Length: 270
Image (cartoon, rainbow, N blue to C red; front, side, top):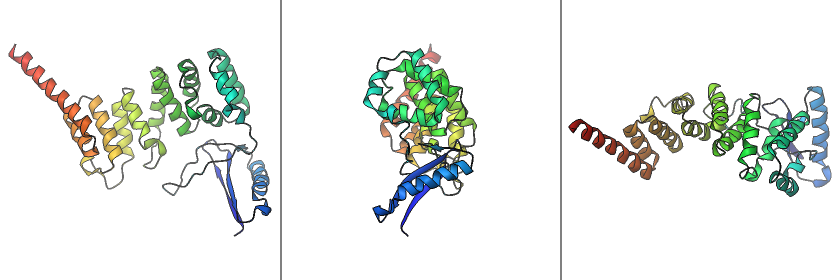
């Protein structure tokens, strides 16, 4: 074997080209792979993208070392000058810029490049613009939508965040889907959708797990505990927090449960 280069299709049907590995640099495998990928994309009536989520069809997981942006089309979004522009740009101008970029590049690639390094953390007004656009675009990659929903929740845009999260939960959720580990159920619980969070957790269980008493994965137990806490099932939540190893949360919820019982007794005595 002289070298190898992985090609894959992302959720949006575009071709991704990953790093070319070769024993002899003189082979120029990266250039050969790019030429082949261009011909393949043309034959498939698609285009080469700089990034995107690749769904696992058979294997439960795979090693993703990052797709390559062969043409540097999105590099401008990663430069310091653009980060400085974000600090002062107005929401309307930002929206116009996004729509222009979406017209020429895959939207998921644009958003992934835009949200790298928390560059929108100090601009909740821009996050709300982005979330509104993403909420109206259900075809974006799962991971991209989830990232924007998390940003929107932090930026005091719960309605947009909830709309995106609900849509993600409504689709088929596989056990090894990246959004189930554990971001989506936790986000749903935090957004006031604990029943949906539990549905996602149940639908993605291992086949050997029939109930919470059979569950062994700490993050799943913790997400379930949070959902039960939001449903005011405090004793159940405390038990799940304990099994997840979060003893501080278990003590906090147990204290809440006892406080509620004492309050109820006082009211009954009155």
